[in-house]
Image 1 (cartoon, rainbow, N blue to C red):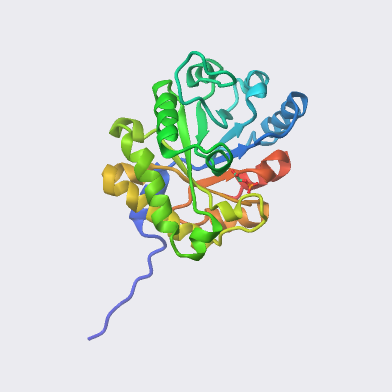
Image 2: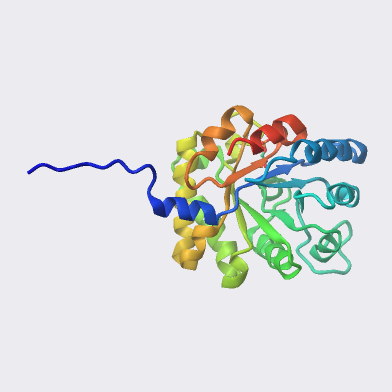
Length: 268
Ligand code: PGA
C-alpha cells in the first residue's frame, strides 16, 4: 500500500497554546545603579522599546528607585516589579518593605525566591510562601524563582529540586491565584557566571515544570509563563526563546544595558 505523507508546518495545538501565554522579558537590576543612573536606563528602555508589541517588558529596580521609575514608565507598556517584598503585612519589621506599600507605588510584579535571597538571606519555602501570598493579596503577580545549584545538577537531582521548590510554595496558593504566578527557572550555576543552560536543557526542565504544575492545576498550567534566567544575553536569547516551553527571560547583567535588554526582547 502507498501512503501519502503530508508535512504540516506546526501542530495547530501548539500554535494556539503559545498564543495564550504572555511572552515576558524582565530585567532584574539587583543592587545596581543610583537613582539617577536607573532613571537614565529606564528612559532609554522606554525610548527603544516603542515598537515592541510581542513581549511584555518588566523592570525590577531597587526599592529606592521605584517612585522615580514609576513616574518614567507612566503611560508606557513597561511594568514595574520589585526584587523582593516583606513576608509580613505590616508593623515592627525594621528595614522591610511590604507588598501593600509596593502596590501603592504601582508595582505589578515581585521577584520572589531568587536564589540570591534563598542563599544569602536564608529564605525558606515557608517564608517564600508568605511573601507570595501577600503579593497576591495586594494584586501583585509573583515572579517565583526556582533552580538547582551546580552540585544538584551534576548529581542529576535538578528535577527533584525544582519540583520540591514548586510544591512547597506554588501548590499552596489558591487555584484562582495560581493564574497570576509567573515562574522563572534560573539554574544557580548559570547566574552571573557567563555559563548558560543550553536551549535543550532549558526546554527539558521548563516542560517538566509545566508538567508538575499541570499535575496540581490541570489545564491552567498551559497559560503559565515560564521564564529562563541565567546569563541570558542577545547572543543566546533567540535560541533559548525559540523553545516551546520557554516564555521569556529574567535578565540580570544584560538588563543594565538598554541596547542589550531591548535586543533580548526582540529575540522573540
Ligand atoms: P544574570 O542573572 O542574567 O546576570 O545571570 C539572572 C538573574 O539572577 O535573575
